[in-house]
Amino acid sequence: MTVSVVLFTSDLRLHDHPPLRSALASADEVVPLFVVDDAIGDAGFGAPNRCAFLADCLRDLDSGLRERGGRLVIRRGDVAAEVRRIVSETGAGDVHMAAGVSGYARRREERLHGALADVGCRLRVHEAVITVVPPGAVTPSGAGRDHFSVFTPYFRRWSEAQPRAPFDAPRTVRVPAGPGSVDPPSRAGIPGVSPGLPEGGEIQGRRSLAAWHRHGLGRYEERHDDLAGDATSRLSPHLHFGTLSPTELVHRARAAGGPGAEAFVRQLCWREFHHQVLAARPSAARSDYRSRHDRWRTEESAAEDIAAWQEGRTGYPLVDAAMRQLLHEGWMHNRGRLLASSFLVKTLYVDWRVGARHFLDLLVDGDIANNQLNWQWMAGTGTDSRPNRVLNPVLQAKRYDPDGAYVRRWVPELAGIDGGAVHEPWRLRAEERARYAYPEPVVGLAEGLARFREARGLD
Ligand code: FAD
Image 1 (tube, helix red, strand yellow):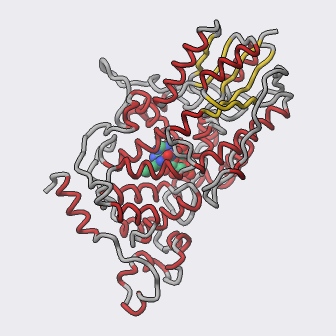
Image 2: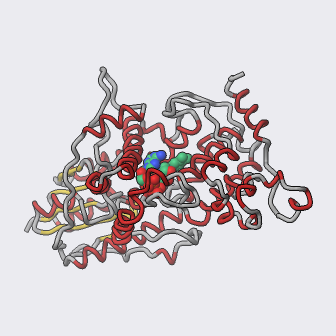
Image 3: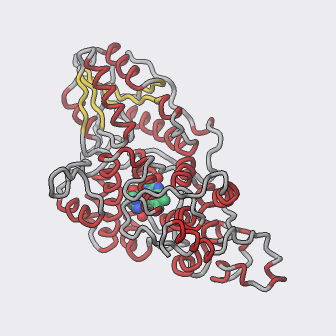
């Protein structure tokens, strides 16, 4: 009787899962394994919203496997030690897993290679599970150029790649009787979870995907920036935890066709772009990727402004609405993320790492590649070709929330102000202004801009 282990990481699904498919094809029995790795919590990445979503995903994966005659084995501890223990308990000849991208994922692979070699077991790392095109598979011409640092040429080359066809979910999974498991975690026991956090798991992901194709995809191009319309896919947590396969998403969108599908595939490519940057430069999770800036205000000197930003009381209604959506849902619309990050790094001139950390504390889709590199993009330290652009919260509001409905939804103390006037409460007559318990702007926009230009030596 041959046994293989499948180590699940950021790929918590049964559909389109190359490591599982490969293990089932080559072994009589398979141990589907997830290790709740102590190192993730110790490094500060165990944020309550993501832990809660993960708990849903593990329960769902376990029930999906049970429907197919198997079960999920969950262990807690050091990932290399636990995998090795399972291999010793079952006599498994190989361990299959998806290739990771972050520095942490790369170190985990190296440690597993070492730990398994000692017991004569092979680690088989599968590409194109977490991304459609493996990082490093598409590179610019020129000696020594290991990744693209500009999106448009990457998108062109990425679009030419032919992804494999997605695989169906297996019908049966035979798991050996022996290996013990801890119970799947439950979100009910996790404190500090955002009240509007979405539900995790592959079943929910596939439902959301089907609904997206029915109602959203076709109009994505024209509606994706409409803050109040909330017309993006909201599939990002499922992509982060791998409850949906990016390869399947690209195939289905291309099959649907049309401008909405094209625009959606382009956004999926942004995810791939950031993943290949991080894979080539793992230090970009912490250090400036391209241009170095070190004149940020210190966390101590900007403490009050940072707190106002985090709590959604900067006095700029659209910024505050976006930050409150983050607190309530553990998710924020992309247009809100752009504006809120610009406000922190440009208008308040606070280091991008401070904002990235706060987002990672709350975002259910909080992802090292997408979060850190989008923050760097906005800070002008990353891949943006216009590093000194500053988004004006009032102009952005007039453009992307013209009627003010998004602000009224998230900033209820301003709900009594009709139409676009809600974006500039400071313009109201004093006696009317006094009716709303809403703060004055933490800084004037002209003052913020002057500080930014001076720090960047732009005058
Ligand atoms: P849709 O508009 O439906 O797009 C579909 C998918 O494309 C998304 O689910 C996502 O996987 C991908 N995508 C879209 N835009 C981007 C982008 N700019 N960069 C990378 N991938 C993209 N996204 C994360 O997944 N995790 C993060 O931690 C994260 N942090 C961000 C921080 C900042 C400061 C900014 C400006 C953006 C960040 N994004 C992050 C990117 C983007 O805002 C989200 O992916 C998007 O809002 C998720 O909503 P959606 O699934 O409805 O997106």
